[in-house]
Image 1: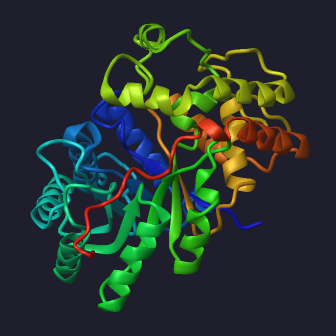
Image 2: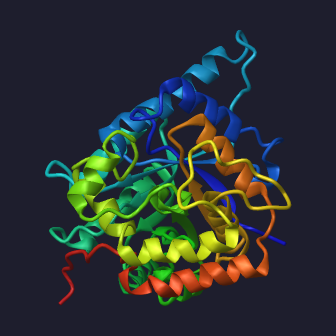
Length: 366
């Protein structure tokens, strides 16, 4: 059975993940002999200039530089020459836009951080409503012709705008987008309805982020009476739902609705798990499913609508989480009753499922 690949997400590098642990994860992930079926021959690291306000890409660049310098003296594994790096331009903060100058400046900053003259995939992270998309696409073509990246990708764009961008580039014989990053997991399946058919028609790969719902599908969270209580309760956990930051609030809105907790109970009953689990309850057996996280990762690799050319972006703030996630993705398919439980869970919370797209770009086309 042909299954999608794993892609190492680096969002926590330079934040909750120490440089030492980040190095350990990258070296292990790039061991293609160990993870041949999972990472293929060209291990992919996913990053973005917005992650840790640019620190993530600096850490990734330092890992690559130190590995190249020290692998002989310290008997370290040499990172493969096929290692794939990606970055994304965004308009999430006041100092960043998807204007032509904005996408150029962000890419050039990322290249400096990586210590590279070119990267493999350059994404537009999400639509920028304050800038027309057409001048941005013209600049993307210029950057491509300058050999600053090899492939063009989109993330968080609606199906119709993805088709529009692809058509715009095709009609001018420009580089077309061939990769799309979107939110997808066992109980968040909005992309299946309209986006997936569009991507298949356009021959674009899909790389799924949030395969564990930002940690919600770890099964270790319980409902709170209100958002203030949730922020306080999680404030010491150091996860994506913690505290009162903009992103923590968004993740709680995205994945911690009442219906989503109820949906997970459907799966939990089939797993025969307690109502909450700890980080240590993640041993993977080939014959059983010992955690909600394991079941969720096995679902997306073996039972989702992802194809062999697609990918699953996995991230981890701790080595133990990374090891568990990789082992879970390496395990086989789920039992039919667990697949049915996930299907029923997804139906229960589909009305509160977060939108896969984030608005629309400005357009000069009237």
